[in-house]
Amino acid sequence: MFFYRGRYFWQKLGFVLLTLVLTTVMIFFILRLTPGDTVVNYAKSIQAAQNLTYEEAYRVAVKLLNYDPSAPIYEQFFIFIRGLFDGSLGRSIYRQDITAALLIKQKLPWTLFVSTIALLISFFLGTWLGAVMAKKRNSVTDNVSSGFIIVFNSIPDFLLGLLLIMLFSYTLGIFPTQGNYDIGYTPGFNLPFIGNVLWHAAIPILSLVLTGTGSWAFQMRANATGVLGEDYIYCAKVRGLSDRIITSRYLKRNALLPLITGLALSFGALFGGSTLMESIFNYPGLGAELAARIGQRDYFVVQGILFFSSSMIILLNFVTDMIYYLIDPRIRREN
Image 1 (tube, rainbow, N blue to C red):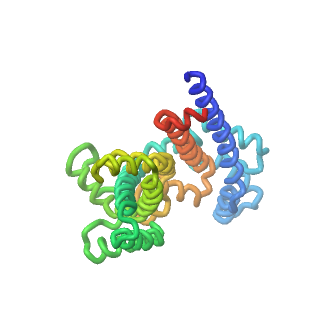
Image 2: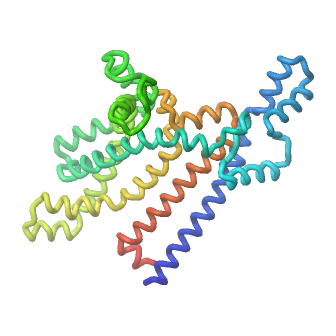
Image 3: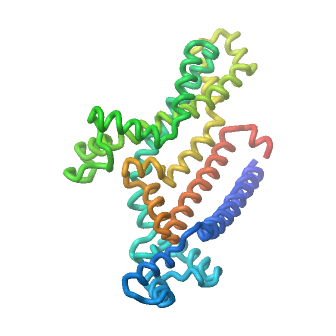
């Protein structure tokens, strides 16, 4: 058994490393295919301000930005890799004291705070609703729930966020329109500050919950409907077990198993931030910072953030595979 477990582990680890290498190369080259050039734009502004020729302004821009896009591609790739392994994950073109690692440290906690709460609420709410819909399929409850889910799934999260801002902030004046907390509060683990943070995060969380619950509910409904047709469910009913026991011990556990991968991947995706949502609410998360750096063509910082986000998704997918191996005997038999 240990031999097979070891072989499965090393196979998955090999795929992880290969995927990480290919992802790193893709991040480097795709960013260089995007339109626009930071040095060219900066050189034009220097040319207009200092009345220099374009060639002189370009040389000044290269020196000030410490970045030359005309350098050989292998040199640029070496700088990229060196930035990943020196702990900075890439330094800003504009300021050498700003690194991708520093921005991740500052912005990621705010992103994870909102997104994790929203993900967990939508997951548990969606799986519960999906199980209810499966048990009462083709009933009024199933049809009404499906209708609401389809409506909210059809609305993009950023558009729903704007609608919620108009309703709860501008019309009712209940929640603030932007930011993560008011400047009058002292940051720290104290109730006034935590309450103010939750007050600012209420609408972003609500937006993500409303748009994310439906997909979990439909997945759970489909899985639970399949489980209800299994022989062991029929045997449990013949044995006289109550619906509550059948639902909790047989239905939910087996229907939830395929959703574990989706939950892990969704959690991994949180490390990239919700760009549009954070921009709409002016929330200081990693997604809003990434969008701003892309607009500035701050390549090294963008590469570092994308590398970090991709690595977290790949790592969590690997961890999920290992968990699946431990809890699902079918995988152990196949391997």
